[in-house]
Image 1 (cartoon, rainbow, N blue to C red):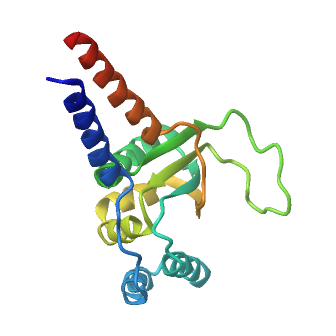
Image 2: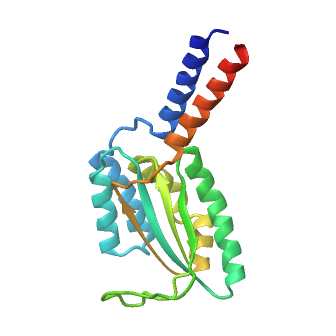
Image 3: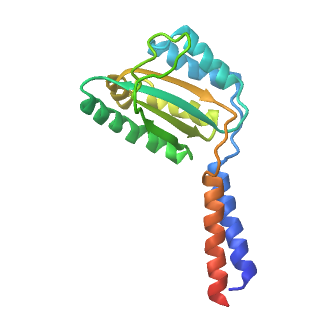
Length: 196
């Protein structure tokens, strides 16, 4: 096997990864956004303001990835709530991983709130997380199988309160795009060395 075949194979492998991880999804149409919003109107636990925020987020689709920033406060007893939340995450993150979504950051609170400005009921957070979504379309496609489902009820049963908002654009130093590129390049370099 010649060097050019090795590097062509490496480039093809990365192109396949890029296609899966970045994707080329069509932007969400107003009709699709409204169909998704009808789920929340039927479900009934989302405020009008929250629904409008989600509608605006879907309608302003830029086709790029984003992160969902989450703060959570577990109900007592915490151990039971953690188990319920873990069962929810197993189902939800499984669906998300198939669409190239993944956790970017997960952290456990080391103390109570040390600063807030004009925030009511903002203490008691136990953990924070940032979850990467490949696109707003992926979020839109995951929601129908989540809202009102048995695994979503596990999440609701485990949380005293939660706070979540989408953030975009966002930046992470490194990340899968770079790590996978470096890993493929390293394997190609070793393969070329093995030939010499």
